[in-house]
Length: 68
Picture 1 (cartoon, rainbow, N blue to C red):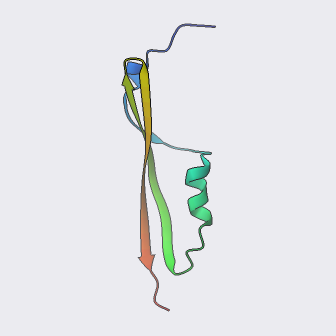
Picture 2: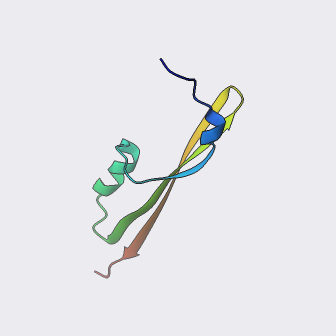
């Protein structure tokens, strides 16, 4: 099936250009009519340790209150 993947080479923070992750896409569907909301840069932080791999998400966003 090919060569094994060296997870240590993937260690670090990666900026994603595209995602289909439901936990990110749901943010665009929130009923935030009183806010001007824009999702910014989206990153995945991969932590490769011996026999263990950790993944966390980091997102930036702008939210501005609109006067009623």
